[in-house]
Image 1 (tube, one colour):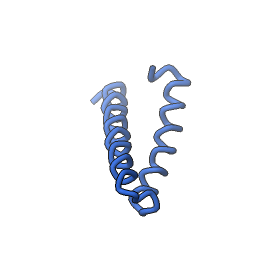
Image 2 (cartoon, helix red, strand yellow):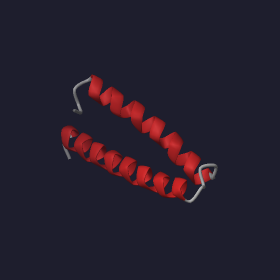
Image 3 (spheres, one colour):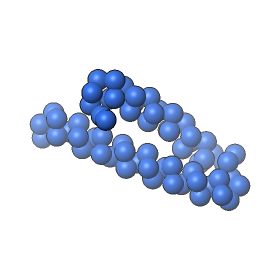
Image 4 (cartoon, one colour):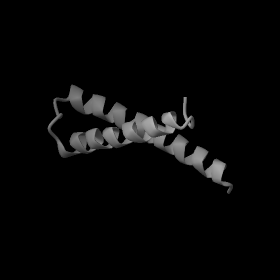
Length: 63
């Protein structure tokens, strides 16, 4: 696998995972479980994903 293909696959996986976790957070919030360990883990992950996506955008690797 070429480097660009590997990056594209990684970015697609990260985007998919971020979307999945956002959906899960919405469900947990609707159930009143914002203080659960799972919700907090997803929240931490969202911060990491946000930072990664910001760097990708900065370098023109994402729109």
